[in-house]
Length: 454
Image 1 (cartoon, rainbow, N blue to C red):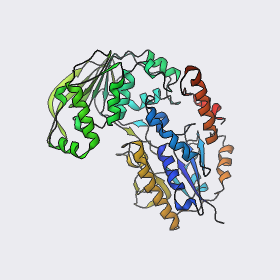
Image 2: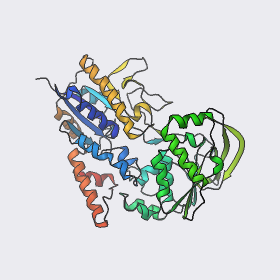
Image 3: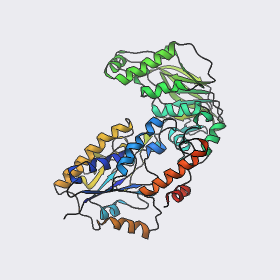
Image 4: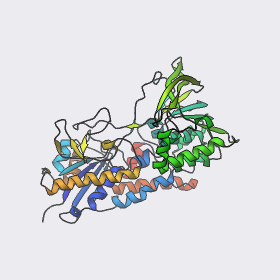
């Protein structure tokens, strides 16, 4: 009887788990079958869901239920707290598996090349998200002394950052935020949050529901300048062809015409303001300079030469995520992705790097919603299975499932398992129970490993 197809997936976030699910649903899962090992550098699985989604979005975190069902399958194993390439590299993975899929996502902030970006008080949104989501590898404190704050960008991450800064700590206490984050937010002095977009309402990348949720807080007054409600032919075409863009524009229009209320924290959504410089004094942020833009007829904008200085003392850039370059894989520096064709990793020569595949943000960049990753996974897995059927996959030297366990054990890698996640999950829920909360997230890596029985 032939042995199962052995596949390693590096990255146990939604992209990697969707790829595992696609493999299990394939014809190969029946004969000769498939055996999948997920490698994750964090002690816990779920990637973006655990460390990239704001804690006050339990609806989005509900995706974990579906991911759980996949990881519960007996054909899948989880190896958490295993770093690529420190603990296991590509050559070693090839010695154990017929194929390797990389789904490592994007966790760093994309650069913004304007003067003053390196001043004290200028932050990347990804770093702030990691802090409030209890990432074990970031500092436990965050400077929140600024009373007036700017957020650059008009996507969902910008909304998350602005909303967390504008809410009170007590509003967020019922969520899973750890104690250090609650204490930090309790001392937050922000009372004015200004979100800046270079283009207009029709070009904003907000999700309609997430935008509307801004207005649900009893402490946040959302304010839109009526002068920022403007459309050209390109904008009108976008609204007609994109239901979500039209819903976002309608919500912004409604906010622009209403009276300003009395809620204590003001959140301003500015459009047609392109950040040109972060102003500094003694090495610290003291303001933001923007250039007013105007539509050019196509939905794009051009500068008007009119500048405004905004009185803020902290600036967060939420202009996109960037993936980390993966050793031994080709790399497209401009896009921050691994070059591919239908999920097959493509070398500089144009040839497919044998038995090596990518899916998710490391493949296409950090765009789209979590659910969009399913399409990526299906295409990548389809390519892998085509190569398997055609005999194009290499044959590993040590395909036995226990070989990788022996390898990690001999190198003293303290790894977690899927069974260990259930233990960590129970420990976090136990921490939350006395406070009437669903869970309190454990932050320290060693404490996560101990709770997981690593």
